[in-house]
Image (cartoon, rainbow, N blue to C red; front, side, top):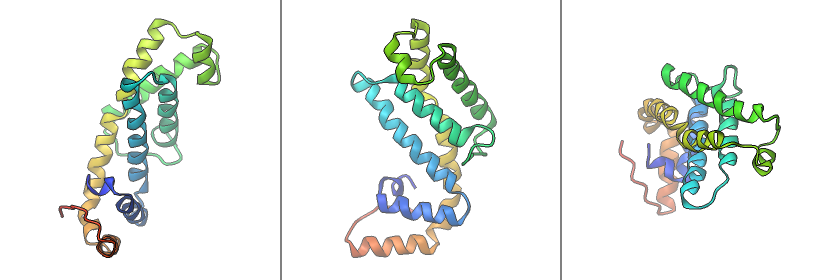
Length: 170
């Protein structure tokens, strides 16, 4: 599964399969966390906008985590889900306490104190690690069915025709 998720065609095939199984929220959540991770890595490589990362975290939270989210992930283990919700609430409170609607305004105003900056810097980068692992494990449950599906066979035929090698252990 991990190898498949590194290939654009493989991801598209797996998304189509998950849609047919009514579990597309898993792969969509996983992909958004991967996007988040790419931005997370930039924090340590350059002077990166930490508040933008917080905004991404808030968007993921409102789309997948909160109760009645549009594409809610329901199978994140209870302690992880509780911890995640609590952490996002804490980070969101930092923004709300400053009475700023936009994160960019908050950053440019200099209104963040050192405690706020430390909280955002220390908490935001790892916020979704456990949740992503739970979702990956859930997608692994679908893996054997995917390997026997027409979606997988179509992908393999297409890759063979394009002479693209993809190592998938099944």
